[in-house]
Image (cartoon, rainbow, N blue to C red; front, side, top):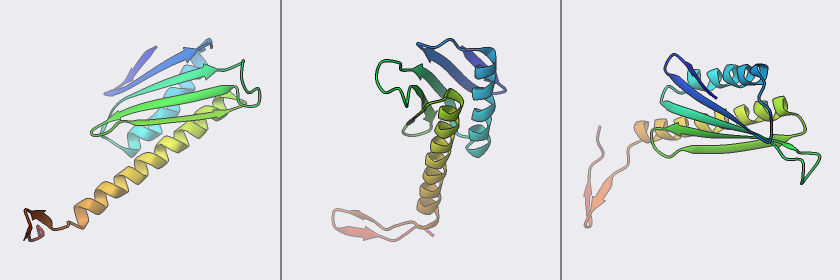
Length: 125
């Protein structure tokens, strides 16, 4: 199911799971936090999976594929409840986006000299 809010594109799919409208709305509401946090997000694909064959303690898995400028971000979280898995997933993605933003900010604020064939160029001021 593709849900669009303003320019935000969130795709929610279910694997071995019936998606209810309340679950879709819950995921959409939680994803809004990420769009407020980082404006460079192009699209988020969320896969909600029910794994009944393997580990019974962790049978609900939530995966996110976040398309941003630069390398995409992939995270997953699992727990015994779907809503809890989504909450854990949002926390993981938020942490990765925050860390990535800090790295870009550090590169922008602390430029390093560049070397070309043994010749060192001065830092940009």
